[in-house]
Image: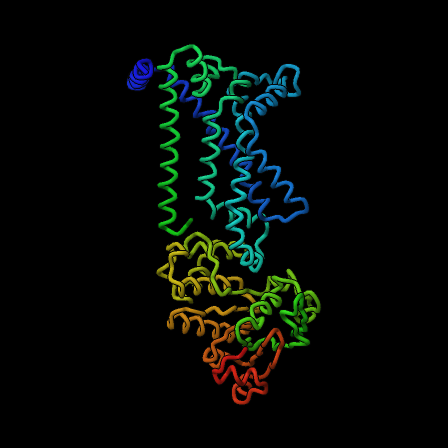
Length: 235
Length: 231
């Protein structure tokens, strides 16, 4: 336990001193995961809305498929992206392997299904309420989808948070396609894994503390936003 | 203008041989709970399809085309999670016209239902009566030829009821067909040109209002009007 206490002390000193390496790693983590989240929302929200608005044949199967993709192991996603981006792979000519872009691609593939599946659930409830009124008004499918996304924005914010949480906390995919290269593709989770195995528990713990603080503050912010929305009856 | 014949069944929820409505009058659909009033309104609007039979408006069969010339006000108003004004914009935006014209129309509609000072408030924070008036304004925004109302004033405050009734009558005077479902006898007396009385999904009578209220020909309608419980 002595080591543990020492590590804690080191963690706070690192954070307080504004260690450059530390903040570089945190910055890259945020950049990769936020970009992946943005892309996932651009993909996932419309898919979720489409699954709600269009009652096509085989819709149940598609929904089950998307739902089961929520539990897809990150390492498998990482492996698939690795195969696609490696020299011999179909997209090897892009030369993206071991770059932040590759990590963004992997995380997008990982969380887009989560965003799609959860937003479908959120929007389904809204659709149940709006459907008859929209049909009465003769609202087109695309307008209905847009209206659902706009009106469900606070519910979808929670969905986005879940996606962000999954992306920023994930190791398996980014370490395979990113390679944990110092100053290039090292993010919080891969750095924690590395520092822990090296025995540098201070750095690992410092990163862990920051990761947790980030997760908590993002959740708090979203919770506050939601509370405001509810007070104004927008949610 | 319209000749409406309709049969619908599954279990026989609504079963009407023939019902022809005048194209401009205020038609009140009355009947006890579970008589099939709301179902009939949804059939007329084309929100649900009859299992048998057909509905037509003049020569046009009921469907997307007829629905776009109608507007419906539901018993419980479904408002978007936006401001009152934005709720009207949502409908006005898909209609032709300039931005300035649409703004003017929106303000006119808000004024008409007495919500000018509520324009920027979240629609869902309005009182029940205000919400229903906004829903009515939204229905009028489409300039419908037929306005369908499904017990729009059930459990509203008297001032809102009066306002909604006045707007409905004014709309009728502008040559809009009104089909109004209610189980409030007083309201039916105030509004009706003709009354269709439903009971157990059957059309029991359909007559001009004066005749109907003075001398209902069926036991069910007679009992209903005199305040007995009709089962």
